[in-house]
Length: 423
Image (cartoon, rainbow, N blue to C red; front, side, top):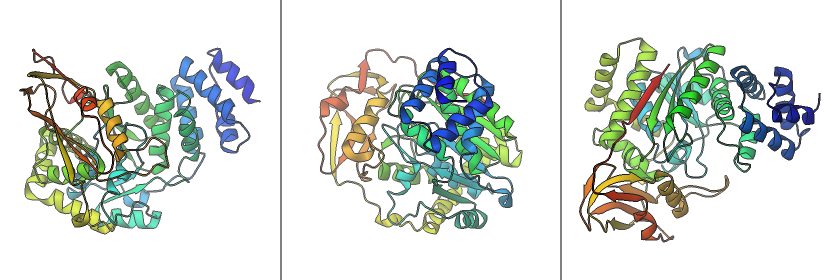
C-alpha cells in the first residue's frame, strides 16, 4: 500500500477502503506522508467526493489519531457546535441557560480563523478567564455548576488539526465529507452523548446554500448513528449577522444583555429555540414546555446568574472587560429598505480592524468591532445610522462599510432565522 496509489484511486473517483484511509491519515500524522501528497488527496476528495461509508472511515481514522474523553461519570452530557459564521456568540448564552435548567453542558471550543469568530477568543476578552482546563478540572466543574467550556487540547484528534491547517491553504475547505469528518471526529472524541449542531447557511457562512447544508447535516447525523450518538442539526440563516455585535468583547456584552432579556430580538429567538431543543433532548419534554422553561430562566435571572457563576469559576472578571473607547457612527447616504447585507465582508473588515486573525498565531484585539443598528428589512432615511465602529489604533474606510449594505425601494424577501431542523 502506498499513498500514490491511494491518490490516483480517488483521482479517478474510485471508492477508498477503510485500510487505505487509515494508512493515509496515520502516515500523514507520523510524517511518513508529505504535505504535498496529502494536499493532492484532499483535492481529489474535494473534486470527487466520498460516499457515507468512506466519510465514516475518515472520521474513525481521525478519532483514533488521538485520545478520547470519557465523560461517562457525568451521565447525560450535551455538546453544541456551530459550523462558524460572523457574530456567533450563541454558545456564551446557550450554555448558561441550559445549565441553569439542570443540563450538563460540557464543551470544547476552538479559536476563530479568517472571517469566523471563535468561542475561546470571545471568552478571552474577559480578563482572567481561564480557557485551558485539565480534564479533572473540566469534569469537576461540570459536576459542580453544570457548565464548563475549555479550549481543544492537542491530544484530541491531532490528525484533524494538522489536516485542517493544510485544507485552509490549499482550497479544500468546502468539501462536505471533509467538513463532516472534521466536525464529528472532534465531537465524538470530546465525549458528549448528545450533540446539537448549528449549521450556518448564507453569505457569511461556510455553507452558502440550503441544499448543501442539508447534505452536510444528514451526513453528520449518520456519523452520529454509527457512534451511537444522538445528533440534531439546526440550519440557521447567516445571510446577515445574528444579533448586532461583531467583535469579541462586544459579543460578550451582547451575550450578557441577552441573558438578562435585553438582547436583540433575532438572537433571543435563536437562543430560545436552540435551548429548548437541548432541554428536550436532555429531559424528554415537549417543545412548548421546554420553551416556557427557557423563557422563565431568563426572566427570573437564573440564566444570567449561571453565566456569572461560570465566568467566576474559570477566573474571569467581567468588571475589568474593556471595549474600545473610540466610536464612529456610520450613516447611510440613501433612503430606502435594507435589502441585503454582505456578512462575509463585514466579518473580513472586523478581522482587519483587529477583531480576528488571518494566521493562527495572530494576536486579537478583543476591544474592537462593530454594532449593527439596522438589519435586512429595516427602512432607513438618508443620514441615519447603520452601525457603530469601535476601534483602537487601526483606521477603517467608511465607504467599505457602506458597501456592505444594499438599500433599495422595495422591502424584499426576508429569510427566517431558523431554516430547518434535521434529526
